[in-house]
Length: 398
Ligand SMILES: [Zn+2]
Image (cartoon, rainbow, N blue to C red; front, side, top):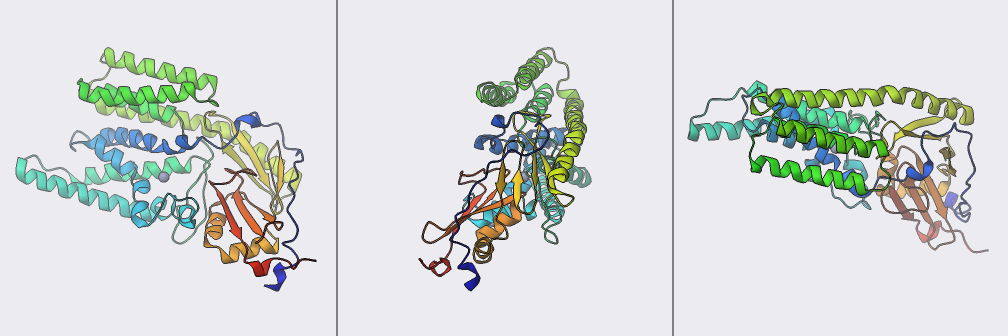
């Protein structure tokens, strides 16, 4: 307790120096945290990709294969509330449970088996009533497995990452390829699903609704690349044309779904390849400025595919091309905050670039921890945890 006294009096000071990182691939003004709704819509991508997987893997044997795929592909997210996750970002459980055990290999295995058994059970019950042909449980298992695995893969390919080896290791892994929300991941599977759907208003209405919302989002939101806007309009146009001209139809719905997954795989591979020089440049910049032990990352930018924000760090500084910020992680007040506050520890386990600020002018002294990926000072809320230190930790007035 004594060690805290002398330190917390110092108010952390921000230093906004320019750093010698190579020119960013993208103007820093566009690099703010993603708008909150964009983070939410990634379940739309999981659902549409899952539906395409369901159609492609269902082999015409599994009824409602697209729906099963959509539900299974979202399982790592919807199973989070079942194990105690709450959307309150002020609580530590948000940072420890979101993309936690439900997004691990172990969690995915449990989800795959549980969903397969549940769906299979439903089909067995239905069959007794309707005398339908029995489904092959292995085809169902494969469908659910690929759909659940697609969630882990898609979450990994961004800069938010996941922890696949929980509960044994809490290490995060990040692909840094495709941003957490990308309209191509919505429109490509949507078009293919529409091409393979029955030609009925019941099937067309949700497609038109989703396409309309996506276009509205992409065209009205600030911070979306011009080429991406044009590309989205083109994708909707191609989708409409293919639907009107019966390019695929119900009989070839599997092919349409597989084609969409192939297009997405190519789109992702192109970004993966383009990220290689960006990551190498980030690594070079980090070593040049902070030495061999420096940390570097190429963070994806929502609305700007094929661009990355370089973030580098030493033990004491986090920096991009536009700013540098002290981390204060060895400050005894910060260590104390991490010791006494479970939410602070949860954030520390989540953060890729953790930085802290100590405000000893307030009583009690306040330690603010943040993940610099998502929360630059002085923002509060998402990715920020503030810990008031007990009064005894404050320095005696002199
Ligand atoms: Zn997820």
